[in-house]
Image 1 (tube, one colour):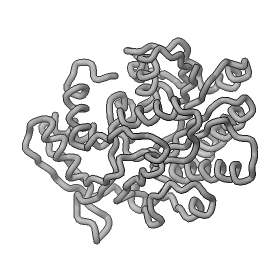
Image 2: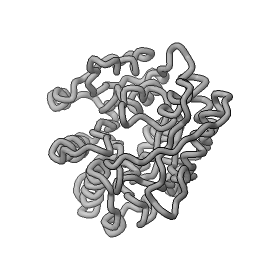
Image 3: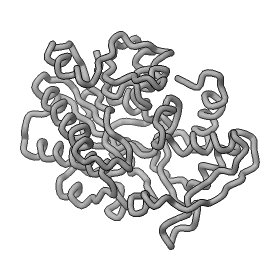
Length: 326
């Protein structure tokens, strides 16, 4: 039995689809809400859904868990309620870590590439306090994820009891099906597809960095299937622990991304540049690129999907289908 927090969300529901396909029993911890989020699970209904506020009682019942995959979080990069973000992203994560350590249950959790901030200190997923303390996240969300990474590093450095397997994954820019409920945090691929499908130009933010041309801002965009392959790899290898980047290792520009969406739809690129919203000034990562040598050294050999291949699969297999859900 595997417990997945945020299991009705984007990455969580895709992970559940993979577990369901294997016949594995999974407990989904999430709110299904009233806005159609349940559709992320409609093609692979879980046997049990636990509301987040009922999670402590569920854990107190001593369920026979093999692993907790902790994906639930406040993930908006523009979040501003520090108390809520700290409680959800840090305190709850600490409580789950301690529970797993006490009950010898494996623990895999979501960190984020937002922890790297501008990237001035590089994108090295080295797991030591000296290195981690050099990182400067740009927003509250990134800071909360970084705070938990630091706490985990401190627990390990102090020799305190830890889960039998523990893994932190610094997700880069993930895109793919079942992200439709994410509102402002939906992937740029989906946003650009919707603009183009409506007959409008694909709009991209002008650069706020003088040395970076408009459209040349670059991120490490990773197709959801590659993320799930890595999660399943880790669930299958209980001897692997550590903090790992989860990106492709190759940064691609936003112009590349928009062009890939046009190509997937068989249309000629038509891109316009618009001012970056004021709320994003000073919080926007103009470049990210994962170092993936540690993940490869751990044994993950699956080739990563190129941006063009991933976008083409997303458009043809989901976004243009009557049922766009996995």
